[in-house]
Length: 121
Image (cartoon, rainbow, N blue to C red; front, side):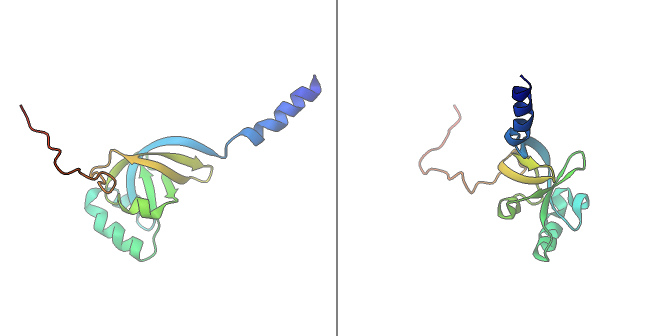
């Protein structure tokens, strides 16, 4: 009986995921200015700092910052308040699976099909 208990206790850390699934809301900003750039008007400043070497991060509505693993994906949402789903580790490194609800929808994946038009009745 004790062997089963001991085996279960040892197995728990092995089975536990080092990342947690999260849904967060906030702004994509640069690591130099952080929360100061958490608004649409600061998008150009954020881009300028990013060009100088600042990393793009997420500042949530409660002020918590997360490092974003995919900088290219984050770049498309600079200056936007976003909701996102992803995996976060204990060091607040965030691997985003999907950006949703951004102020300016990223239409790079949504191609309009010619000839399909909705007309009001």
